[in-house]
Image (tube, rainbow, N blue to C red; front, top):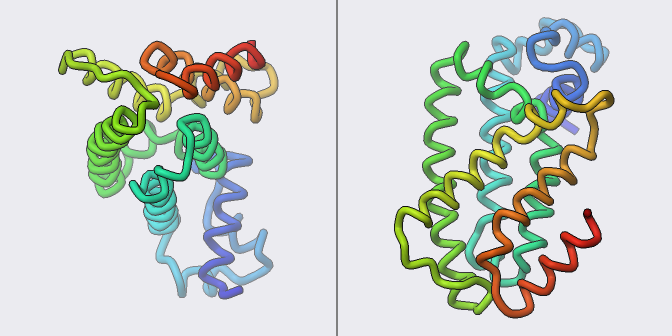
Length: 204
């Protein structure tokens, strides 16, 4: 594995464990058993590493949301895959609102990311309606409310749930999945409605 890739993977591990603020490039180099100079050959500072990781998270997100891929997935599978990805990059979902205040470039990328996800939500919803998985929502304001609520939940749930847990961990992911499923449940149809109902009963 190339050093540049190892830096990114090590950074994810350390950021997830201790938070971005607490970790320095020296910590990353030490964990990799390389010199700080070797690290700086690839990245000038920690901010560059964070930006690169955010680009990686965006790519993984968009891969999950690809229309062709979506046709092969149930809505519950879609929820699970997204939350698995959130867990891989959990430091972003814990700290994004603080990180973006310190980095104008990251803030700009974050806004563009949210705007694109809003558009992808509508595309995905229309596909699910076409497939008979969801009912059609004719009220534009209600559709916007649902899209915004889902996105708000997906991008802030770790901050909320973990702040209330004595031992924060992957249970926060399970709670996030359940809340998103509950929010979508009234709009499901056919077999998808049955799948959501079964999922929510087993999670209660």
